[in-house]
Amino acid sequence: ARRRDRNDSFDADAFSRAANALFWRRATEVVQSAALQRVDLFDCVVCIDMCGDRHRVRPVPLGALAAFLDEAIGVDYTDGEHTEVVHERNRRNGALTALAYAPTGRPPPEETHQMILKTFPPNPGLSWRQMHDQLLGMPAFQEQLASSDSHEEAIDALALGLESSQRGEGSQRGARAATAASEAGRGAARAAGEGWT
Image 1 (cartoon, rainbow, N blue to C red):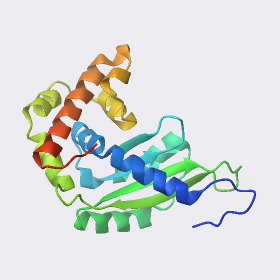
Image 2 (cartoon, helix red, strand yellow; image 1 turned 90 degrees about the vertical axis):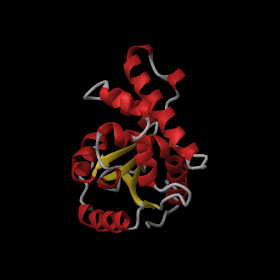
Image 3 (cartoon, rainbow, N blue to C red; image 1 turned 120 degrees about the vertical axis):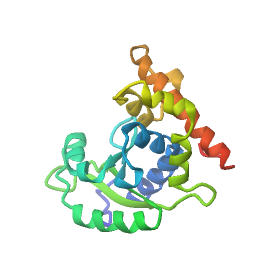
Image 4 (cartoon, rainbow, N blue to C red; image 1 turned 180 degrees about the vertical axis):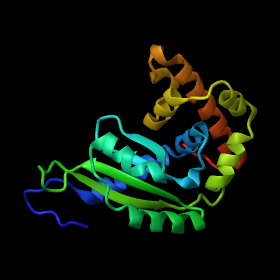
């Protein structure tokens, strides 16, 4: 970790703790988003974007990570090899890999964004795979999956962690999709006796 000097106001420890808290608040939405994208959750890196006022948490396939970061924050991600090693280790252990990032406030050529690779182990009562499989087995979620080939509006709403009342009128399809995904995902969590939020 980079040591802060008195002119550097970025607090990497506080950022890391905030990213952890944000991930756990949005864990259900992460599983739902992967299912709506029709990708295996374990083939993804969960991107925890803390760059703006509206933080986003979204699974991104590992092979698309560099392009995603370039488009999202204009960063040329060069740590792909290390990420692949950590990702494979986590996958074997049933854990998810995440990459949290936020602006540092430093001008170029300094490090303009802080990036931290994170590991989130499975919940003891309900593994990531069990949660995903239970979600896919729910009729409401299957109905939602069958309703469209693309669920981009719902995926965006899930990334933002928006409640259905916060979603705009213009994205009713996305609101319905995210609501169905949310209800199905929380139902899967309840079925396993875990109180995911």
